[in-house]
Amino acid sequence: MNIPDFSREIRLSAEGAIPIGIDEAGRGPLAGPVVAAAVLWKGEGFEIPSGREKEFSLIRDSKKLSEKQRETAYTLVQEFFHVGVGIISAETIDRVNILQATFLAMKAALSNLERVAELRGKESSLVLLIDGNQAVPNLSLKQETVVEGDGKVRSIAAASIIAKVTRDRLIILADHEYPGYGFARHKGYGTEEHMDALRKYGPTPIHRKSFRPVQLANPEIVNKRFSRDLQSRKRS
Image (cartoon, rainbow, N blue to C red; front, side, top):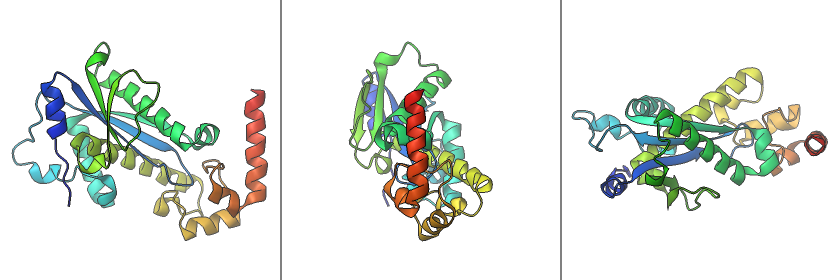
């Protein structure tokens, strides 16, 4: 089991930089928003408080944690990190595509973090540690991409937990608004249960109608709605 550490943050901090971890959740589902989180360690150093090492071992790749473990880790991250969150809706995903929507979510999360952590005026010192191999475009800040960063860099792992838990909570709320789709169980991913519901009931307002599986599940309904939405956006 890979446990991420603070080695990269410590190196950057020694160079006078302020390291910020960024990750997202929800690129693959057929429904719901894409969510990004940006986090910054609150303390001066990166020392784990004595006696809390076991708790901090939960700050790792959110996909490798149980739901209960993620909730525990979420509380821990909120305690020790400044946190910013960005949420981009399915409607925007359909309009700009999922990759661009992910970048928008990351920018929104960073903007939120800058307010929370009072980082205005410190932009030249910020270094973004981003999970994956793609830097955020049209951003003047320094960036370092880290492939599988949520398993290597603790700040990225912390961001992955915030993003995942935030998105799961939103999709669980959607389960109450749109019963019958099983959102609370599959979180919007294309499971057999989800696809059966799509074929039976058609898409909801939170479905990503530009995604091929949604279109194939109920093409007549989706194509009419998606086409109407696009025409409406063009006129506006």
